[in-house]
Image (tube, rainbow, N blue to C red; front, side, top):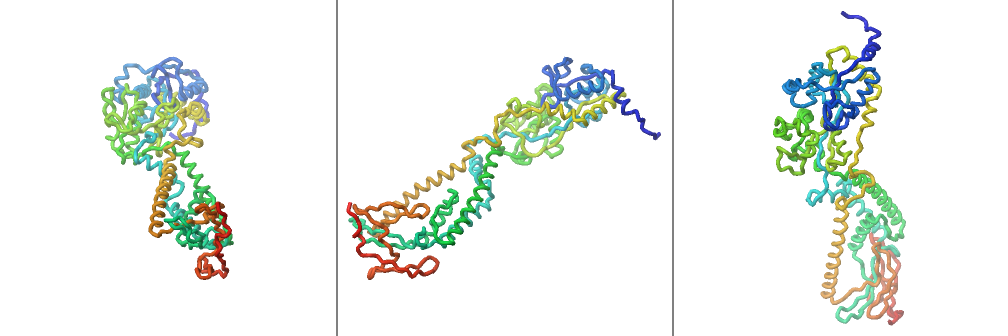
Length: 546
């Protein structure tokens, strides 16, 4: 029959708890940090119990004005519980609560469907299930070498690198050549002063000017573009308006690109040092991994992600298990066994595993005590498990108790207990800002640096062989009287040949007319220059004998 709600229901429900005595059985959780814990294990009846759930129930008793009688389920129920549920002591307590032998069980219980079908639960928290794998600690494998080598290129995509290295830098370099070719005092002269020396007698035949092939200037302009990029400055002397504007373009390009590159590389190196061989469950299955897991966690992941049960290590029969996927054996400490039986390359996949399915709290507790620091959570959350405490719902106090628990949870008291108990990660820092990088993380730098250094040695050998071969074939050694640095700036140094000092400034022309010793300049780009320079026949008159 329908009617109105009694206006005193709220106050009467809470007042009905005052002075009552609740029979409480406590299970000791074997993992995580959100439950109840006792050094002697489950169903101890002293006051050594700890954990956020224990503190929450104690505070509830204080607020509700009722008493807690710590007890344990009667032993004669254990056999019946095993027939219905299995050998778990947690199922044993749920069984006792369902039949009214205890008013509530205190611990962090996974609210499995079979448990929820026999009695009511107050939900305390959710636990996230993750895939746990080994961190990559390096090693002399081709894959680790390739990964570490390519790290320094990760700030930009392959397309961005191609655009920078094969378009932007060459174009800017060639534009500088276009502007500065044959400019007075510029780094791309059309000719250079040389002395032609006889290979056999070592005597100087002639001092003249020699045309510089445009291909040499093109090569030099490209070289200086890449040098500017890696040196982060373009130090060439420029004289034309176009060249000066192009230098601003080159300098701004280098500044902006290097700033972005440095920021991205720093983020990559310092936030992703602890690498893993797989990053999600799909990759793990494709890589042929098998998995360790506690029974209820395994059931959740198998159902949700369609994992083949044969990939989960079975419960060890020799330790009282039933041989089904997932550890549930009463004597094997299932939640720690999950981590202890992980191997990089398991020899027996019926006993060991490559990775594991675990609740995040289990690994957090181990990391607080600096255990299993070589393992880490990867990928997205695989599943959530609801956790709570079972309450006998066959009397009039169960509804009042649930109402009190919900009120306290809504007031944030459950969250407060959880936050105070959350474990800290005390493992040695492997990632994060300020971490010192190791040799392996800098593999790309070593490879590029020493490859170029080796190339410089090869270039020196090849250059010496080529010059000697050319001199032998022509019978003439070309001695450059004016030298230039890496930025094509003239160097101030003396050139001595057979005890004589040669002055490159005495050679002014670009093309020598043997009849009248005059020349005319034709600069790069087809432009003409009417200025002419004479070369005096007394080239050696002002030389001083050493």
